Image 1: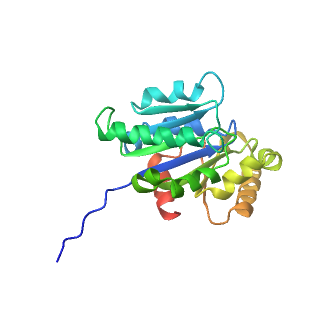
Image 2: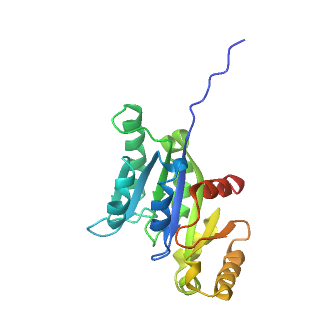
Length: 213
């Protein structure tokens, strides 16, 4: 009887979304200092001539790529696909520091839905990567207004496996509760937690995703 051929282990990918000012870069910078995500590769999506997040984050990871001047939710999808392919082959050929997972930080304007479709339709991504979870950040100081005014933010919440309400130290408890209720209305299935001053650790985030994906 022929022995089973082991399939290659797919690389987990974590998608981090959140509207402008929601605190996602601050959280990510803290997570990259935790051992659980210390060997992450980063793909950072920026619109504009200067990638501010890349300057903040690339010093914490030797495996960082910038997808600039095109939102990866739509016209920038080929750039995201190419970035994932490039780092996979560079990793395989030992041209870059080995990484155990990939974190994609989207621009605040990104709708995650086309990205999730890409992981199911692109042959290399489907074979070599797996989308291990979508994390969405919402600021307690502006989240209700953002959800009321911006459809992209609503989509980010609806597609999330984990929603993190940030900056909870800056508002009253009643305001946090009102935002949590709005999130629960949009996405009852997602894990929902709070964070103040990037207090949510990477280990907790990964555990919550494992339970909700």
